[in-house]
Image (cartoon, rainbow, N blue to C red; front, side, top):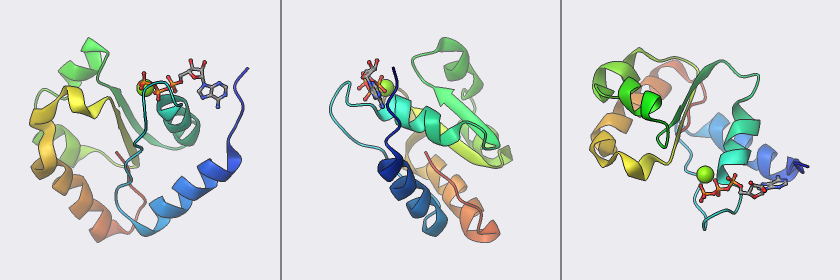
Length: 105
Ligand SMILES: Nc1ncnc2c1ncn2[C@@H]1O[C@H](COP(=O)(O)OP(=O)(O)OP(=O)(O)O)[C@@H](O)[C@H]1O
Ligand SMILES: [Mg+2]
């Protein structure tokens, strides 16, 4: 049974209102993925799970792909694709700054 951590969800949603990107950091198996999936369910956007080869392939050209996305972008296990890197996230960051729409990853 999944226990919804509503306070935590509200905290992240609030951070997303005021920041173009929010990082979910924590020890193994603490619930980062479940929290990200709960946050993103029902919200337009894209979810990348970098433990899934299909999602890794979707990000094979990160600069082009990230720039074309709209809505909430979640990148789970982002450390598995270090070449995505800060310079690529800057594209999402800049997009958020220009549209004032909440962004994550
Ligand atoms: N809100 C929740 N309610 C109930 N169980 C939960 C909840 N969040 C996490 N769990 C339990 O913890 C396990 C790990 O959750 P999750 O995969 O989200 O963690 P994670 O931090 O993403 O792990 P990893 O570091 O391995 O990626 C889940 O399989 C589930 O059993
Ligand atoms: Mg996880």
